[in-house]
Amino acid sequence: MMSSALTRIGLIFGSRSVEREVSIMTAGKVYEVLLSLQDRFETLPIFLTGEGTWLTGEAVRDLLTIDAEIRRLAERGAAAGPDERARLDAEKLRLNRERYAPQLENLDRGQNATGVEPLFLAPDPSVGGLMSQQERKGWLRKAAQHPTIDLAFPVIHGTHGEDGTIQGLCELADLPYVGTGVAASAVGMDKIISKLVFQGAGLPVVEGVGVTRRELLEDEAAVVRTLEGRLGYPVVVKPAVAGSSVGIGVAHDTTELLNLTKRAMRFSRRILVERAVQQRIEVQCGVLGNHALTVSACEELIGSGEVVAYRDKYPEDKKPGSADLAPSIIPARIPQTLSDEIRSMAAAAFRSIDARGISRVDFLIDSVTMKPYVNEVNTMPGSLSLTLWEQSGVKPAELIVRLVELALEAHRDKRSTQFTSTEGKALVDRRHLVTPGK
Image 1 (spheres, rainbow, N blue to C red):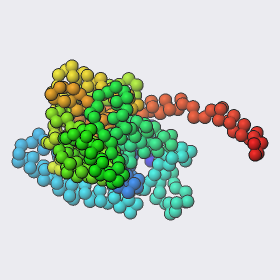
Image 2: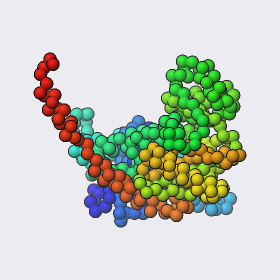
Image 3: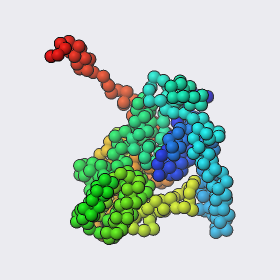
Image 4: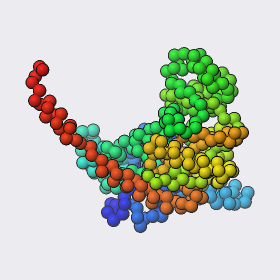
């Protein structure tokens, strides 16, 4: 049973998303920080399976504990000599094979997994939030109330979590939650819509064209003609609704364009095709706050190809539990005036989608003209950009505490909003006075 003296946090991760592994890594890091703050917070880790089943229990805690063990081995390996690094890498692989992978496979069995308690978040605030399904035998049978939480801390990346869905559930349940609200989460997740919002806010973006799966299926040749006529080559092809650079690629001719559009369509109903900035620098900034904003230093990403792809951000030899994934440089190797401009644009992009809590804003810089372009706003950045914030002067524990404070502040602000009106009651009264047939 959770103590009422502490703020009770539900750490929600996993879900139906191609970025599920990234979510587990983020949850592992956040869980470790929350455990260091046990004088303030009590944490209930909640894992969402690939089928959408909600689970808590010892098996879920065990998964995050193993992730932390692998991450510590990675940290030691990064500072070790070649022989010791090889030994630590072998130990990481053993832990992954013998403990991490089997536990994840167990959790994916959902309600049939061992060491778990199935539960769900009730959208009706009157029933008390989290509900246990352990004794539930049928849909109409009453579920038992689970020890409640004071606040949700969703660290889901991508679909069914970062896209406004979990946020909407929390809003219905009247539960405070960390991060951006429903509309901003949905806009931030959609690269086509967010590009339009950035343009409307006067922010520079790379020219791009949105394409739907149906348009491609109905007239492939017409789609190709439009893209080649407006953008030429090379172009960057990416799913409109996906993160972590999943499904992204660069096309240099018609054959590559068709192959990449079809691949990207596997991950999203719509895709975005953009003119490629061939000589580019990729940087990102963190933004923290609801009203008064704090912007981090600029971080420069180092990729192995024409774009920073998923394999650059999450190399195979560094999953799971890696300390530092994508190679990067903080602060970015750009002039101070440009850094200041980008940090100002990061705050403007954050505000343009009405974000709150925490986000990471990604930029492309044309290294010939040194002109920056807003690429996207990530409303739930991988690992919460803990390293970037730490090198910007905000310690992990400080960041987590601040995010909780911002979530509670946003919820208080919501509570000051009126959701009923006398005009509505007057309309009902007038309807009752209308003569039938008139």
